[in-house]
Amino acid sequence: MTALFALATSLLWGLADFGGGLLTRRMPGLTVVVVSQTIAATVLGAIVVATGGWGEAGPRLWFALAAGLIGPVALLSFYQALAMGPMGVVSPLATLSVAVPVGVGLALGERPGLLQAAGIAVAVAGVVLAGGPQLRGAPVQRRAILLTLVAALGFGTVFALIAEASTTVTGLFLALFVQRLTNVVAGGAALYVAVRRGTAALPQDGFPWRSLPALAFVGLADVAANGTYAVAAQHGPVTVAAVLASLYPVVTALAARGFLSERLRAVQAAGAGLALVGTVLLATG
Image 1 (cartoon, one colour):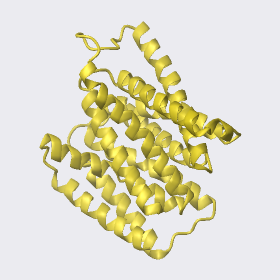
Image 2 (image 1 turned 90 degrees about the vertical axis):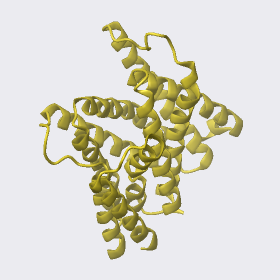
Image 3 (image 1 turned 30 degrees about the horizontal axis):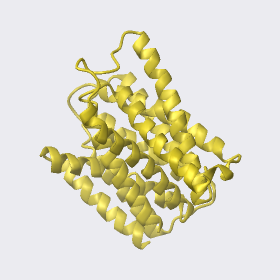
Image 4 (image 1 turned 60 degrees about the vertical axis):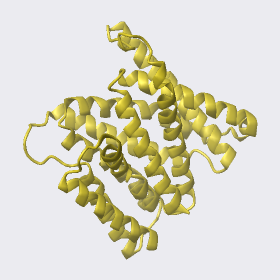
C-alpha cells in the first residue's frame, strides 16, 4: 500500500507541476498558486462539511497550519530560482527535499533493509538525473542556489508535516483543508504586496477563463498528492514513501515529452530508467 500511494503521489505532483508550468506562461505564478489553491480549498471545505470532519479538530492541525505557511514560501523560492536559472541546475537540486522526510524517518528509528537502501540510493540518483542536471555551461548565481536550497528544505518539511497532520481519513480531509486555506491566505497576502509594488496580477487581456479547468486540475491534483502521500507515510516506512513520492520530476519530464514533444536528453532518459529500477527495488524490498 505504501508503494502504491507514494507512486500515485509522484504521478499527481508530476502532472500538477507540468500543468502549473504551462499556466505560468499565461499568467503570473502567484496568481496560479492563489487561484488553484482557492479552488482546492473550496472543494475540500465541502468535503469536510459532508463528512463531518470538523469533529476531528485537534492539536495535530498545527502541523497542517505549519505546512500551509511553509508551502508557499518554498514554491515562490523555487519559481524565483527557476527564473534565475539555469533550470538544468535548479530543478535537480530541488530534489534534495527528500532528505528531510528520510532524515525524520531515520531519526524515528526506521531502518530500511539492504535492498530498500539500495533502492533509495538508485531512485534518488535517477530523480536527479531525470531533471537533466547541467554540469557545465552557464554560470549559476549564488542567490539561485540559495533559493533552491530554501525551496528544497521547505518542500521536504511540508512532506514531513503533512504526514503528521492526521491519523484518520476524515481528519486528513480537515488537515488538507486547513493547509490549503493557509496557502490561500499566505499566497493572497504575497500577491497583494506584489500588486502594490506594481506587479500585474493578471495578463493584459484579463483573467483567462478558459484556463479555469486547468487551474482546478492543478489545485486538486496537488491536494490529492498531499493526501496520498499522507496515507503512504502512515501505512509504511516514511523513508520508502518519501523517496517514491519524490519521483514526480520523472512524470513531469515524460508529460513534457508526450504533450509538448520535448525530447528527453540522454541523461534524463538514463535517470528515468534508474528511477524505475529504484522503484522496483523499494517495492520488492
